[in-house]
Image: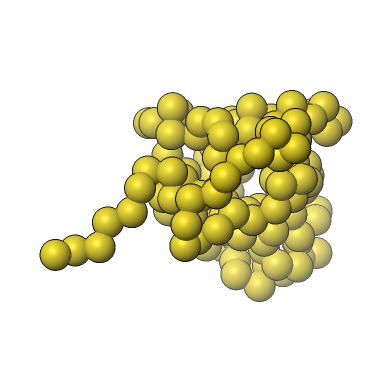
Amino acid sequence: MPDTISTTLLRQRIRNRLMDLLEVAASFENTARFGAFEVINWWEDWHRPDDPAFYCEPVFSSEEQRQIAEFAKVWNETAAVEEDDIFDAQKLKALPHWRRFRETAKVALQVFELRGRLSEAEEEEFPAYRRSLLRSPPFA
């Protein structure tokens, strides 16, 4: 009998993987270490563009949902124009689309870090004090 997990736990794990990606994407040096194409492809591994309802509360706060949508938009723009697999942080810094990519990832990561990583083993409880973080003002 295969192991199964709840949809909530799956969401929690995917949220953590998105945080992993945002940590890499928020740094030119980290992006260069993996390579531009790998970072672009990594987003495709974990983002579910055909299922926006997947990113629902309480696992994903409304602000996290907004940041996912914004990062997805910038990711699409970057993926559409990037032709080279760049492994040099200075080259990434010189390109406007990578500067925007990095900045958007930084903002999204700050939002995700308000609640931090969620359990990978069991469903989180979202008590009132954590729910209040769901309504935190957006970062600008």
